[in-house]
Length: 78
Image (cartoon, rainbow, N blue to C red; front, side):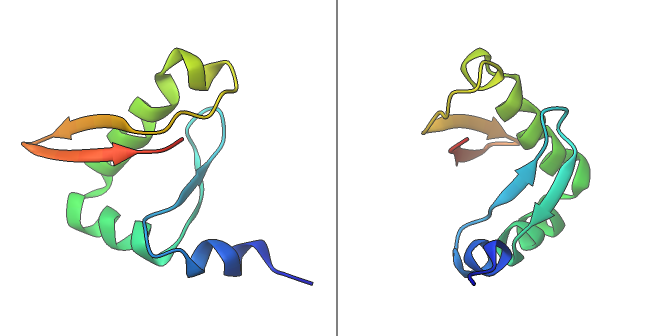
């Protein structure tokens, strides 16, 4: 049987699994690296911003969300 965490871990891009309240449930290695680079408050800001979008709140997935943070641009898929 395939382990879902192994699949998420094999993705080279940062992957975060969060619940509807924004609590982080899982981070793959790339996401952990990003969290260290940004610091937890800024990393959490990216997550909170992503789940605050009305389409996401209504259960839709959204691709290509652009978020600028300290002059850096992040492209987010939720």
